[in-house]
Image (cartoon, rainbow, N blue to C red; front, top):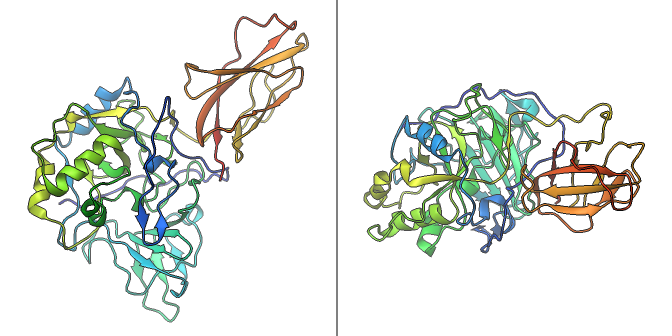
Length: 416
């Protein structure tokens, strides 16, 4: 199995409110979240845990799939029984000492230490060169600690060096600040995207998996917050792109571990998380994987997948305008409450304003409210965390409004 490589991990540092989770249209059914130790792995409505079998297919799906297929045309499990394959993780508790972490590549985009990393923590690759991830879960605090390019220093402080690192709270949907990396190129947590043998043996994987592509776009889709490319080709997959195995793909001939993994790819899909060999699916290191069974996955073609809509594509962070625009225009916002307040500038002739919000830029299924004659409006109903679009228009009488809306703008809801 080829080891993954990442490129262009640098991006402008951004001190903004965190962005989060996917935006969906229609009903999404959430199963109970997966469990690690005594902890649920993020809330049931977290992006990783959402059933995406009913989401619409992206118009650009054929181009995305074709670009991934240009490197490799079949799935490949990047895990198995040998210890050099897969990504290991460890579960500790509060008795594990906190140790210093020295970040060598992306210190400004890393969560500062200390981290509860044992001196003997398992490192991805088991001595082979590669991404050298270290993943540790504290089962008392339900927090996930992840390092990239990690190495133990064997000093009195039991410190570690790492290229980058991130801490995730399993009880929260919060992600990285927009533009920040993590221990993964996409700014995502790694652990929730791993195929784990204990889940397979339980009969079902109830979350999305993580996979890599040879070439990615300089863009990302939430819940990803970072890209690792300089290529702006719109036909390349952005970080955070979600693909699913088509419902028409016949699983009746598949058996054992492979069938459970493939069913998860139909229900929950998988997310582009890093640059590497195309169609390589990540799994946890475990000597008990049945390698002969996993061989079945290698016969699944990339053409059996389709990319689905989970939110808008971002090519950079979202700038907040320094001065109000000349006409009625939303002011860009980032909200940590599910009932955000919107503001806009005044139109002299307006006696009231309409505000409209949707989860897509075409405003299909939009919700419209009469905002009265104020220049702000607090949304009365809670929004699910995600990326949305909004616009405003001025009305010259109680019933007569401008025929056109202002240009649309985006906002992010990231409530705890």
